[in-house]
Structure formats: C-alpha cells, structure tokens
Length: 135
Image 1: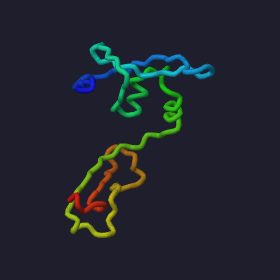
Image 2: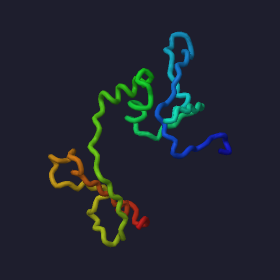
Image 3: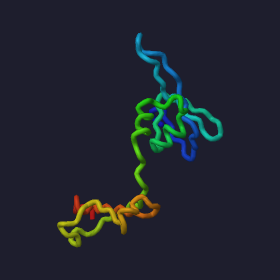
Image 4: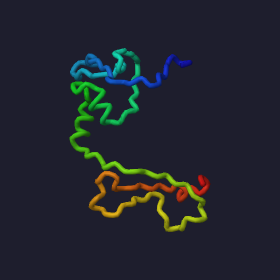
C-alpha cells in the first residue's frame, strides 16, 4: 500500500480486462495489454500491471477473452497435455532413519497402467534427503 497498491481479499475476479495497443513502429502488428480486472459484482479495477495467480488454463481459457489470448499460449494449449492430478506429501523426518539409497522424490502407485486414474497416484517428497538440517 505504501507504493500505491492494494490487496483485496475475497475479491472474485471473473475477467482480465484487455485493450489493443497500436503498433510500436511501422510494420509491427498491434499488441494487446492487460489493463485491469472485473470482479464478480461487476466492479472494474484498472491498473498498470495485472498479475494472475490462477493456473495458466484458468488465466487464458477463462479470464482472458479468447480473441486476446496470445499466439504463444494458443500454441502451448495445442501441444501440451495436462498431467494427471496426484496427492503430494512432503515429509520431513530425522535423517538418521533414512538410508543412503533413499530418493528425494518418489511416486507410489500399485499399477503403472492406472497412473492417470483419479486418486491413483501418491507423490512423496522427502526434503531431508537433500538437506538433513530441515528435520
């Protein structure tokens, strides 16, 4: 706030507002810039900078109008396949109980063919393996 910003809690953003900007120089294409957000109650807040903490999918497939999604994002969505969801457990334990052959990151599942099934995968991270001082 001391630099003119403001954090608004429980402010449900439903749209990122964009505007077309004229070309910076002759021969260049016009560009689109984010200029603010619209809240679920219809309030529009304008700003010099918009930072989205939403996922890439929510930002560019839900919050930004389809006509203003950058080509680089369109290309990404055509190439990329979402990975399956999984439960992650970060476990810190006394380093003395961990053998030297223990890996930091582990995937636990009963059947690799069921990797993408709902609730089929557990990802276990043991940071103590990399840094015993965190225990």
